[in-house]
Image 1: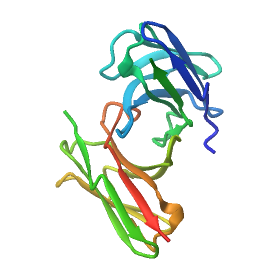
Image 2: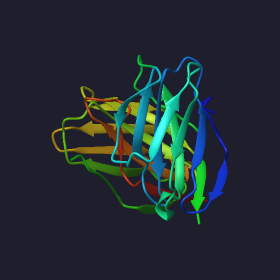
Image 3: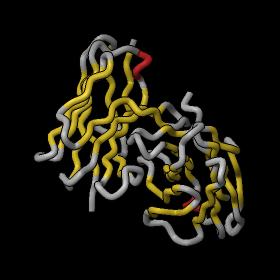
Image 4: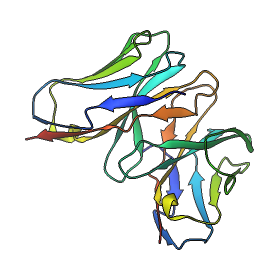
Amino acid sequence: ETGVTQSPTHLIKTRGQQVTLRCSSQSGHNTVSWYQQALGQGPQFIFQYYREEENGRGNFPPRFSGLQFPNYSSELNVNALELDDSALYLCASRTTSTDTQYFGPGTRLTVL
Amino acid sequence: KQEVTQIPAALSVPEGENLVLNCSFTDSAIYNLQWFRQDPGKGLTSLLLIQSSQREQTSGRLNASLDKSSGRSTLYIAASQPGDSATYLCAVARYSSASKIIFGSGTRLSIRP
């Protein structure tokens, strides 16, 4: 167990809908990152938040957005869902004093 | 653009064997390299992290090496056990952000009892 939790575990949406995924970081971790992992592939970096501000982003369109709250929990929001958004979404947290990231168990999103 | 490749994509070996998983990357300007384990449908567990100034790291039956100049890393697993069955992913971090790590597609390892 890494101390990082994600909700929900599974989610089914239809194309065009919006979705919010949640992550609770390990205590004391002020940096959170989100990744998308398609079936059979490695995770791809979506963005990182530090002290409630986005400070790094991968090659994802603006319809992927996020929030980080003062208690270091965070959200990933995806608007106008597309079929290709079906994937496992992982969050990872760390402190700025270490390079090791602790991953949550992920949310499996299916878009029909 | 950094690309990370892991070969083979899948590997099946009998219990007790020593084995090596390979990872290659195209840009040698890395901050660190990590090896992760992922069980089916689950999140990632960090196994070993090698800083760019290091050559290897060891944890129990696992040993990871790093050769930046050739863009290669290996994960050595000694005396494999059925519980080692999982997908193993390597990932490299750029200098600019330790969180923006680039993953390979992984090697799916199966240990036969």
